[in-house]
Length: 295
Image (cartoon, rainbow, N blue to C red; front, side, top):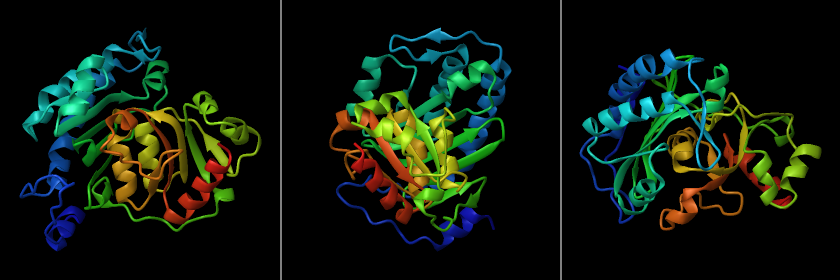
């Protein structure tokens, strides 16, 4: 019996509430294996053959995109409704289509076809594909695939997080001064008072890195390879799967200014979320307090 089967056999029936999705009659964890196979196949056919072989384009917002981003997204849009029939919100869609789905859809797939496009374009092997199923902007299932290491991370709301089909068990906490921090959009942190300067000149942690692919940063923190995370602002496809995986592994998340990360009643707030996160609740409290003192 696999770790997933063992967990499902022991799970108690879900209790529905006004703010939770309707009861489905099955565990969303059962989506993990077929979706992992589909995503791995898409990576093999649409993503990796283009690695180090694509030209980079600039989008209107200044971010970069490649043919690989578009090809993977098209493949995900085609296949995901076969697993759960609802629309797909993708990073490369037109902005007005994204906003309409984000604000109006009950169920939707939220996908990042290639997170770490800059790394992909220069040949750095740190990028991933992220897939999440959301109900009214709250992630219910999430899966991240690392095509270089063939690692699969996934989680279902209330049912735990897994790495390569093994349940992720939170490692013991450490002191903030011993932590390894991942940082996203470092330059944009200047909008939060003195925070950017404090991170540069008075860092409270032992080590920091800027790996450049949020979907993997979330998962590697959940698995205990890094300890804390800060990001100036993530869009839904950046956090939809990863934040759920971290929470289900025992980690904690908040925005830089608010404790309620999943502000599902305010789609505008959730459209670009600044992040404070840590893999353990005790470490999270110490990290959160330090960040907010320096904003």
